[in-house]
Image (cartoon, rainbow, N blue to C red; front, side):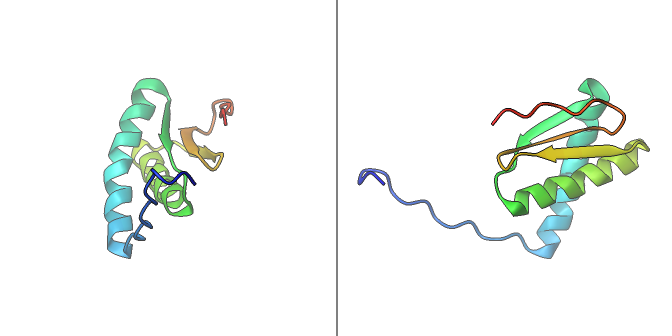
Length: 91
């Protein structure tokens, strides 16, 4: 690591309450993107963020009364309706 770049601080894991509140809040955003464009894409580069957005995607699907799927490549996650073709996720 170059000497002029300070090390990043470790991320604090979300509490169970924060996970529930986050999934609820992001579900509305995901549902809006699914209604308008049929997909939602966001950076999710840790297992915690993938889990958070998958939970939010399930809630969005329930709210829209349509099944949704999520695809992750370890960097990004894409949520789309289950009856659409699988998206290509660039590395």
